[in-house]
Image (cartoon, rainbow, N blue to C red; front, side):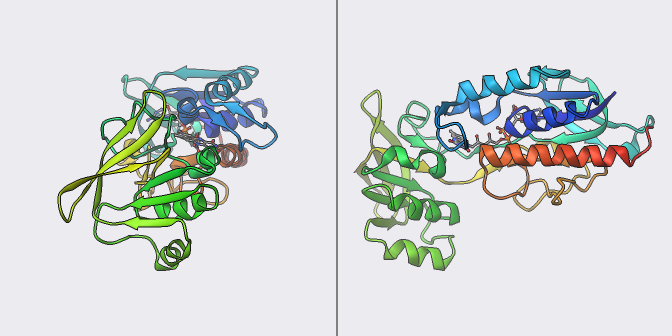
Length: 312
Ligand code: FAD
């Protein structure tokens, strides 16, 4: 059995594994796809002290750093349940995998991340990272002086519009329903900016491009049924970030109403010995540097737990 088993191999999981291994304790990482969301992005300019890097490069560096230590990496394996030590005969926490195998550990760190909800319209996949973006903090500066749209009129959509308005020439917000779900105070702020337009009852139907970059989008005006086109360079999709926590639904680990794992300041979940870090948790602002910090914190929390808990 492991002393620390990390579930998830993104920035949070890699950081948790390194902090655990540096304590000289038996550490494992099980991941569906080592690298995580970082593999899906190109330019990264806000990983402090590294002026610019690329997603696949950072993912390779994460793996290389973890491999400097004695850590078992179990890649391309998905966890589908976590069973409390109180319920197992051997007194270890059990992590069950989809493959049917069970991994045992004295402590577990869940860092399964999240995924952006997609529009599922033609052109979205083709122009991903070529104009279709999901993270305004990450990719906003790439559209300096250009016209962009934000899809979604919830808090994240309106916040993105305000954020982008300071950088780009013009922002159009497209909201599907007839009301904005965002807080009034930020809607007022967006409306007060000269270069933000909010269109309600607008269903985005297609991303258009010239083969290399986005050039426009089509939407249906749901009040008239008419198709309309907006010429632009970027589309920020802000219709929700979905935590990868579905596999915990049957466990006793407490999730928020949005499905995020509830954690204490030390990264503890509601299950003794089980910690969590990164985008899958309730910790706000989903970023690489935050996920790494939280991963190291959860790992130190797990070590603290281990030295106070008897070996089964
Ligand atoms: P993830 O990176 O999501 O990693 C989760 C890990 O868990 C993966 O290994 C996954 O395979 C694994 N996993 C999931 N479910 C299971 C399961 N059931 N069993 C086993 N393993 C599982 N942030 C920035 O700071 N700067 C940027 O420029 C930036 N650009 C981005 C661009 C894009 C297109 C995207 C999508 C995100 C971007 N982000 C950026 C956000 C950043 O990538 C995330 O905040 C960060 O990766 C979160 O790290 P994490 O370790 O919590 O989760």
